[in-house]
Length: 185
Image (cartoon, rainbow, N blue to C red; front, side, top):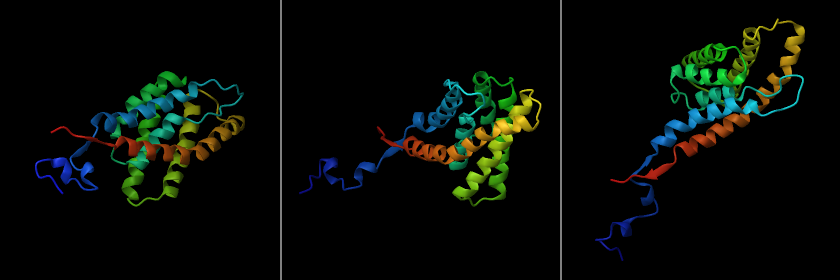
């Protein structure tokens, strides 16, 4: 029998989901923190003669922008690129410029192709990461010749292969980000 004075007794199977709201702390901080963490991942020491570690900060930025198009503002490339410049060893300003250009390029693709699929997102990420690696090498002062291009190929291939995993992690983090907490009203 339902007790009319006790509001908890009237809850049905879905009643626990009513009157819940997203956590603003989780909703706004998780994308930024994962991109910043991705920028710090290449600091893990790996002994290699050639660059192998993909630009994980950029991969997370591209994944967040493609999975949740309106989540990051257009100017997000500037502060996130600034943080990446501080820890990547690249000349100061290269990631600021390149990440801002990446954000503009993704915005252009989204306005041109409003429908998307995973394969299109993977192609966009492939092209953007390839252009990023080439222009980052140019900004670092390296002479672009055949040997430099050959050295960048393993890092580029690994970046292409890792992007679906990064997109899956971002999708899981997006579900966690939108986790509902009970509002107190």
